[in-house]
Image (spheres, rainbow, N blue to C red):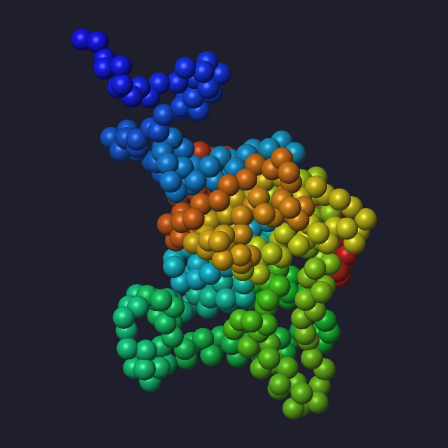
Length: 362
C-alpha cells in the first residue's frame, strides 16, 4: 500500500550524516552476564561494556591496569581521605601497599590514626546512623555514620602518640619522617602504616594537625612547654619539599584519588611545585578517582580530572577516569580485580632513600 503523501518519514538522506550515525552507534551496551561471572575480575571486566557508573568503574580499572603494567614504571601516588578504615577498607589499602600497587601514600591523619588504633588492638564496631547521640556521648562512644569507636581508647591512643613523641630527639620533622618512626611501633601485619614502613613506602600527612595524631602531638607540645624542655614538631612545608622531589625525580607519575580533600590537592600541587626545581613534568600520566563528591558545586573533591588538566596537574594526553561510587564499594572491586589478574607481580618496589629532607635515591 502506498504511503500517504503527507506521512512524515524520519529518515536520514545525507550520506555524510548516515556514515557519522553508523560510527556513533557502533558499540552496543553489553549486559552483565552473571552466569558467566566467576570472579571479581570477571565482574569488573563486564562493567566495561555496561553504562552509567558501572562503565566508569571499568574505565578506572583500565587506567589502573595501565599504571601497573607501563614499562616505564610510573611512581604511583595514592591519596586517601574519608572514613576508609571505619568502612572496613584497612586490609584493602594495606594489600595495595604490600603488593607494590602504590609507591607513595598521601593521607588524612584520621585514616592512618585509625589504622594505628586498630594496630594497638582496638576495634571499630557496628553502629546505627539512627542512634541516640546524646546517649553515645554519655557512654564515651564516638559515631562515624554507622560505625562506633571507643573514645576512651581513642584518648589512650592520643596520649600514647604524645608519649612516643617524647622519646624522639627534639627538632623539626616532616610528617613523612615522623610517620616512619611511629609506624615502627606497630607490629600488626595487617596495618597500613606498619606495611608501608616495611616496604619503604613514604607516608605524607599534609593536614596532620587536623587529626587525632595532631591531638597527640599537641599533648606532647603542652607537656614539654610546662616542663620547659625542647619539643619535636611537624614542618608541613618540609612535606611539600620532600614530596615534590619524588615527583621531580620520577620518569612518570600516576595518581589514585580515593575520595578527595587535602590528599587529592596535595598530590596535584606536587606537580605545580616542580616549577620550584626548574622542571615541567607535564602532569600525571595516569589518574583515576573514586568519589561521591560532584563537580557542579565547584569544590576540589568533586572537580574533574579534565579541570585538573587546565592547571597542568594532569597531562593533556593522560589516561584518566572517574567513578562516582562510594569507595567502600568501588575500591575493593578495583583492587580485587588487579589482585586476581596478578598485574602487580612484575612491579618491583621503589628504593627511596633520604638524607634528612633530601631525596638521595629513587
